[in-house]
Image (cartoon, rainbow, N blue to C red):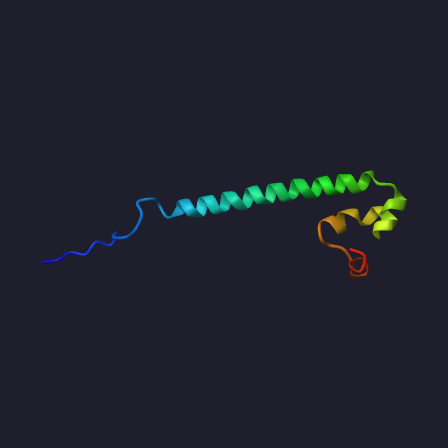
Amino acid sequence: MTTISQTAGRTLRPASSSGFFSALALRVTALFDRLERRSAVKTLNELDDRALRDIGITRSQIEDAVYGQFKAELSRYL
């Protein structure tokens, strides 16, 4: 009688380890994205109103522009 193993060709690691590392990578990427956006907001807040006007935004639109929620009229400037 011949028995075929269900685990033939599989690794001995649990399947959830790849899911864990994928989730960890997503969280690390999200953290760096958040830090980069916070830095951009800080940098734009340090500009004077004339420099912001040259870019095409006002001080009240900084966070919307950085976080991608800018209005349609801003899209022609960015």
